[in-house]
Image 1 (tube, rainbow, N blue to C red):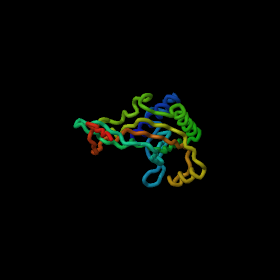
Image 2: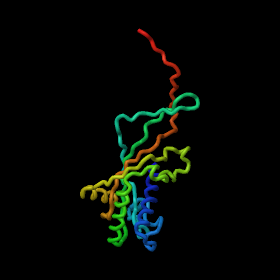
Image 3: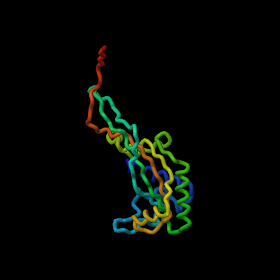
Image 4: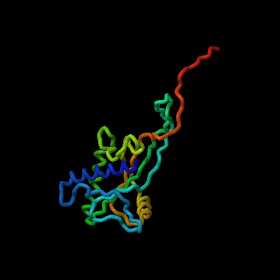
Length: 204
């Protein structure tokens, strides 16, 4: 589900920037946004001028709310399949504009912010291709996403310093978005409960 979300956003942002720039020599489809860690396994910066923006998962957290209850789905044997409530995750996605030309990097960062300002919410009603990367949705429903909600996550100077220190790099023009991701149910539950077939009332 996380992969589904990030690959979808990569494609949408890539398409948006290409259309926005109208500069085929420098901005071409699938060559603007890269989904990968900004840091290579050997600790070096994993970014080149071949792309403009690298996006990566910086952190995640589960959003816990009161009142979430299991769901019950009827089965062919007249029982009910008990499904746990869907997971609500908060993803923190880092978008890094790493072009060597500083002016270009700032322009790419502005384009990223403009994209999410215009599209803060993604669902299948507005974006039918949201789950297009899921090849077998009937067999792997846990990969499906119901909705993505983006909000700009402002970091203090201390938090930025900690983030880039963790990545082992100096600051590069970047922005962090908090993404509320709501997924569908995990349907492989084996816990069943019998259906209620009759009700008895006892008079006092």
